Image (cartoon, rainbow, N blue to C red; front, side, top):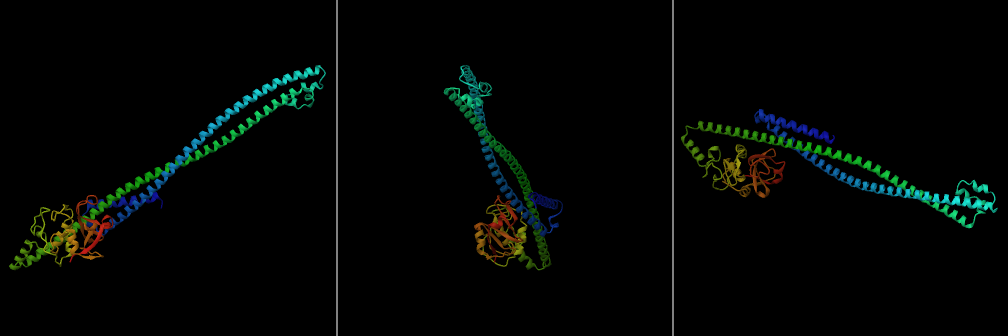
Length: 435
């Protein structure tokens, strides 16, 4: 599967699940979707989120490599331009030299022609005095080269005239050779420039391809980031659906428990002594039921709702504690608060435990850890201790916990359920079971 196909499939799956969750949350009760289905959606979204994270990181790495490659091409292009400019300057200088040599050759040729005419005059004079023969050879010579090769004339000209002819011939040949060398050098420089220009053309093509690749990577990165945002929204919707499901479930369980308790009380109402004892127990801070919220020397107003620590006792109900804890989802965090309207982490755990069969009062995180038996395989109702025992929650099964959190950088402050597969899972120090 290509990167674009993978990205398309991930975005399609994420958006589809987000739409399903949005429709489910907006049109039907949370209980209509089984908890297993909601958690499966959570797991699927988390897996897709990880795939998107991996894909985004790969895109960033690929883009970084392409940008380095593009910078290398740009540096090489600058170097090529400098070399081409240097070759152009050499060509201009060589053309100037060739032009100067052509002027020199023309001047030499002019001197040779002038001396040739003088020489013909001297030979003519020699003829008239009878010192030379075969004058026709001299007069019919086409140029000085032809004349210089004629052995007959060399015998009749003076030694001075012969030296002059040879010097002019030598100068002319020298200038011609210099011009030929310059032209050959210019040809070599021209070929080098042509090669550099061809390299520049290829380099420009590579640079354009690198720019297109980076643009495509930028577009892919934007698409993945958009898919990430959609995935996070879908995960939040899934978490909210699970939390709502648990809240509704725990509330229904608590209502059923209260109805059963009410029915049991009505059935034994004729026993006045029993009814009196039950009422006394509730009014003095009994272990279960909403009627005990204001018991044990506290009020229902928040952090002032504290109670004494008479020492730990056994016999509490772990499932009852989990059920009761779910009723308080959404209650706000307040440092030091012990419920029922606001809690801190240890206040929340102490509150629901003391109303689920235990009787150890308000304990700190360290105090709760001190009365627990360490366990390695947590069960529903076991306590979870985090971050050097600075935070505590209750394990509710399925890899999740319920707790009261006040750190706004991680979750919404207050009582909520959290997954132990991500951030919170990395913060777990130990698990403990209440006596």
